[in-house]
Image (tube, rainbow, N blue to C red; front, side, top):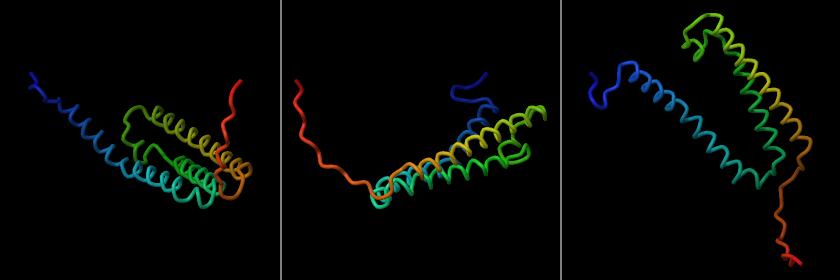
Length: 133
């Protein structure tokens, strides 16, 4: 019989694994928050959106293409046990999704570089409201 508040050994192990995973992703989250607020507050008014958006898209594409290098024996994929064919299929699915995502990022980088106006955005003066009939 379990005491109140006691977890079975497998559940305690799972909780520890979840906490470790959360702790490992906190630096990534902090970096994303810091970069997005810095880019929005500091860089966007100085440079405009044209250099920032294609750069962000290109960095996303590089990240996606780097993720296509995972194998069944690398890092996270090696922690999954099961049939070898199932692991190979899962890794193949991941690499396919990363490749497609990387291509979408490349297309987005090209489109934003071509379509966005260059220069700093200027705020327009507010206009007088028009009375409705």
